[in-house]
Length: 251
Image (tube, rainbow, N blue to C red; front, side, top):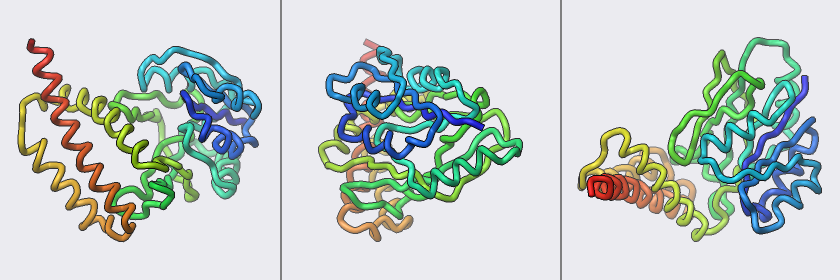
C-alpha cells in the first residue's frame, strides 16, 4: 500500500523543512500553497513535494482540495507546523500494510507551547483523525479547525504527532485572534448572538478554572498558566465577536 502526505501552507518557511524532512519516506507529498511570499514553495520543491498554488478557498475547501489532489492508497494529513517522529512513521507504515477494513486512524498529538510539551489541561493526547484511506473521508466545517469524517470504522495509533504550535506569545495571540473570528461564525450559527455576559465574562473564567485546575494544567508550569490564561481570553473574544456579527448583520 502506498501513502500520500497532504499539507496546506502559506508563509511557513520557519516550519516546512522540518515537517517535510519527517515524511521523506512517503510515496507522494502534496503541498497546496495559498500565496506564500517567503521561501515555503522553494523549500517544499527541494524536499520533493508537488507544489500547487491555489488562492485561499477557506479552511474546509482548501484542505479538501489538497486531499483530492492525492493519488496514493492512503493519505496522511499534516499541518505545516507538525512533524512525524520516527516511531510514528514506523507505526504508520505498519498500519497501512495491515489488510484490515478500517477507513482511518486517529493520531495523538504532542502540542508544544513556548517550546514546552503541554501534557495536561486537555492538550494531550488531543487525538486527530489524520490518516485516512483515499476516498474514505471528507472534511466538514468547524470554524478554523475543520475536521475530517471517515465513512467507516477507525483505529488509533500510539505514537504522537509533534505539533510545534506556538513558539512565541505573539504568534499564539495572533492565532487566537484569527481563530476567535472563525469560532464566532460557528457560535453565531448556533444562535449565540446577544451580548451575553455569561458567555463573554463568566464562561472564560470557568474555562480557565476547569482546564488549569481540574484538568491539571498547572502541572505544565508557567507556560501552562499562560496558555490557559490566553485561551480563556480567546473564549471571551469568540462570543464578543459573535455579538458583533449579529449587530453588524442587523444593521
